[in-house]
Image (cartoon, rainbow, N blue to C red):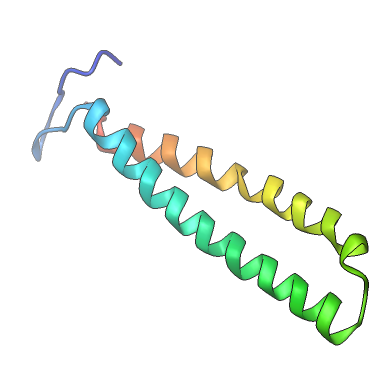
Length: 86
């Protein structure tokens, strides 16, 4: 994990310092989009359709955001390790 490139049957693998930020950015963008969709769905169903007060729904939005942080870390690590494997 030094940032050097390894050799594979496909040729040299890219350095981890180049792969990790790109993978993190892509996964973060997809997760932000998923959070946006989740928040709008929760708002639409609970506040608009079921007429719950916003204060009663806010904890569910926060919990959804906390749960969606997990998919940021795991795929970033897995894809980075796969892309930089020797």
